[in-house]
Image 1 (tube, rainbow, N blue to C red):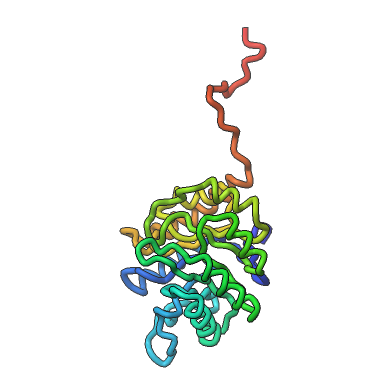
Image 2 (tube, rainbow, N blue to C red):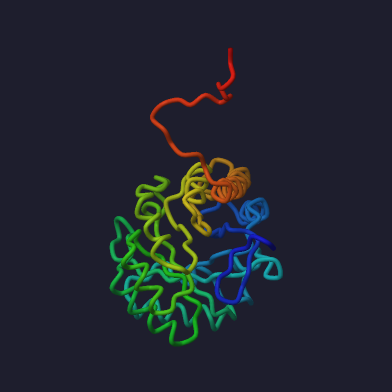
Length: 255
């Protein structure tokens, strides 16, 4: 537990959070979750059957093993997101919420104005709010100032697999806020995850990158290893980039 991800009053060994949508089957989802090593699993409140008397996605998630992170996916107004978050807390018994307020159907970029409005309300109601936002350092600071437990800037549009399109903004966000920075959306493969961690991000949340792979179980394992490698590389400190070569062996004393 020497290197853990701390969010509010919880501590996690794994820095990978995994979604539950788009898998070929629930059985494959279960195997992918296991291979990912994740301890946090996010579920879309509006897209899952919360009536436990009927078959539900939740029947396939070991609630003793994973921490549920309800999300407000599919909400386009602050009011919808607030209602959905309240429903998730009531049905799933957790104050944690991944807050999404989408502003555009084509890009799925967040509506930052509505996001701030919803976050203010939910923080006051005692929620642990993890907001999905643009890679905007100013917005990240505002979300921290109103009491969010973390910020979740996108790497690229949801489900695009484009990887981190603007690493410089992510670096500025890391310098701007003191709460955890968890990259969310756009990660397509293991190298994308490693880059995010090498920048110094505290964690990643991904769904499509794993669920949409030809072999989701293998990709889940790859993402786990990439995050571990990226974190180690960040802590180790990479060598300085140079324009010209430098001999690996000392040349002093060579005759």
